Length: 77
Length: 310
Image (cartoon, rainbow over all chains, first blue to last red; front, side, top):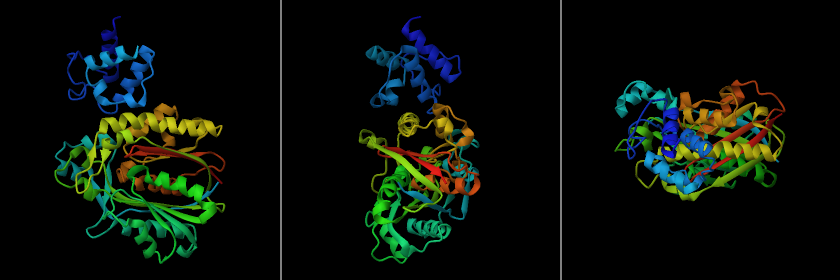
């Protein structure tokens, strides 16, 4: 499965919604990922892509849209 | 290492329901409890000060320890909501307790203040003797400042907690503690002069959900203990959802976590000691089984403390 699809699957799993947000749509403002689901999203990304996200990168804006998540993951691989 | 001799607490009389706050903040019924787990909070009376609250909690703690103020060797007072810039409430508290030469220090660091105070006291008790740590806050006057921000206004309450840390045996022996600070997040949660509270809630939650469990795990590991052995976790009561996240991360039952946040709201530095006072009063804590304290707040400051009930 391509990277973007894997990220979307994680977002759907964390939000428990069969959503299909636009690449640049805010996952926060649209209510797809709430504040307390955000740590779960980050942890799921770490597991799925076998990466370790340092605390200094734990900034909500890095995980706000599918596009930003994909870009961040790409930079960590 | 030092001992915890007693806890004390004080809550203002006025109970503020979610219905009242929801009307004030303009949010729909049920939203507060869903977002925070908070069901009610206390607000100080008009004219009541942070020092007034601190005095009541200090007196309650000293009564529980059967100790006179004159026996204190030091006071440490945590507050992020004191009425003036300096001197902080510590000097006034000492004065109100009838002390005129006992050192009294302020920790103006908000939510993690009481944990920092307990940790420092545990290391200073051998030199200074009986140390009274107090966390006292009137957060309502800050979060209700216009323009009202519903995301912070609904969370906070007022109160005070106290803890007597002693070189002599008492309720629990303090085995160890860890303190951390990362100032790169100083802007994420701050109170500028005469301004409303500024909080980037997502950043706070994202960082706290990772840093609190990690500090607890590190503390337990270096003391050859595991989270499963811990009988009670007493954390800063920021938000019920955050406490549940910590329980999940540590893979321990939620029932081991004190959750006074439901009735007190987030009382910033006071919350840890208010929760501890209730835990020691209401729970049948077993001797020899660890209790873990933890806090996270503006700074970011965070840490954990390990104690063994006697």
